[in-house]
Length: 257
Ligand code: HXC
Image: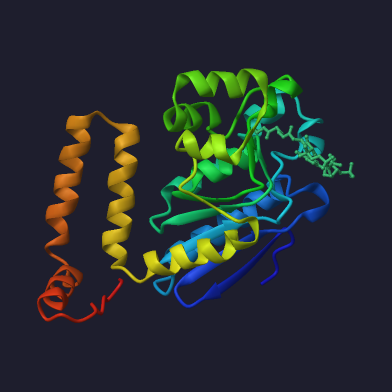
């Protein structure tokens, strides 16, 4: 395909999107945002795809929004353009998305990782929200998602000082799902994605939706939502197949969707 700032590839039911602006440490400009969002939208609509991996390079997952592009903008520009609002579309994907993070995940890079459902990080990963050093604050959901992920104490510390956090701290805080040697980040993410993609798509997408409800609603409402998703899965052929396979001591053969 004719992308300029990303590479895309599929391997069975797994799609891999690689951010590819190496000279700018994968800084997230408008073009890259459009390409990532477009690729995710297309993979999400593809019944042959059951999980998506988003990754960068070994040095940088993404060093943030493109400062050189942002530098020229004023208040009227960012308001009228709805600058970076398109990233919100990632939250509407039903397909589980895994961020495979090596090196810098700063500013918008950290926010992009947090827009994903699972973060697999390498030992060299560095997370941070350094926008304060530029006279601004996170603008792709970071002040909200980081706070929900790690709590007020750490979110205030990171967002107000702009410091970088090493992977041990990020893991201890529960920001990342797994830490692996840097050279194994992408292969591990692909394995996790392949595992997820082998399940019933309806069940994995409902599982994702149910967990996300925990961030967006009260416990009572979340449990109610879970129950209705859970009950509705009993209308699927994949539930029949999954439970029959267990009873017959064989591997399930899910329809996916
Ligand atoms: C544009 C960037 C960039 C960025 C790096 N580059 N980060 N360009 N936007 N966010 C470019 C550099 O200008 C340089 O290009 C090249 O990438 C290599 O970077 P160096 O700084 O030479 O590398 P290094 O010394 O290894 O330092 C790495 C780094 C540093 C610590 C990650 O680059 C850095 O601090 N970057 C900015 C991080 C940041 O502040 N991110 C938050 C952005 S604000 P040239 O051409 O000069 O060689 C944000 C807001 C989100 O994300 C909300 C928006 C709505």
